Amino acid sequence: MVLFGFVLKKTYNPTLSGGVKCKGCDGDGKCRPGNSACHTCLGFGYFNSNTDELTNSGTRCKVCDGNGKYKPGIESCPNCRGFGFFNSNTEKATNSGGIRCKVCEGHGKVKPGTEACHSCHGFGLFNSNTEKPSVTGGIRCKVCDGDGKCHPGTEACHSCHGFGLFNSNTEKPSVTGGIRCKVCDGYGKCKPELRLVIPVMDLDCLIRIMINLH
Image (cartoon, rainbow, N blue to C red; front, side, top):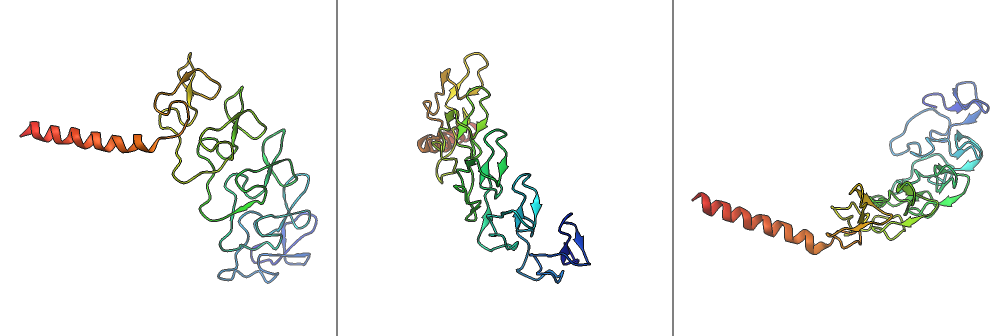
């Protein structure tokens, strides 16, 4: 749409000969300071309800409310990329409904700085067979307690990566059971008191080394 101002109805390619007016520039093809295209729909304002491709009509973009323009103070959800939902079969982000995104709660937009849980990547659950993050159910993430959001002050255990358990055969972090992580006692969360102990121990060791050198 850059410099053209219009897009063709059938192909949605930029054109000079008229068609559907570009929402990002209001049809004049110019880029104005503070008036940029929506980062989610790239200025189209809508998505095809069947294919989720960019279009000028169909399912309205949740981030810009269909006007195609970027709104300061509003960002696309880092989990669903502004779509708001996940397909229950493919688990891919979609605009056409399905399983609601837990991070943005289906709205597609979030406040600046909002992050998805670093352990389950915003899905809130893990597949019990593959042990990968999943939106369709399974084992609840221990770090975010299943809500998919990153909570300030809460971190995944540095030992088990938030899984809480280790596979007894492979000794890799696991969500399906096995040997309980000794650092977090199986909770999957990093304990603040443990983070504070480490620097004190390091400082004590450094002092001892310096004394021995003299």
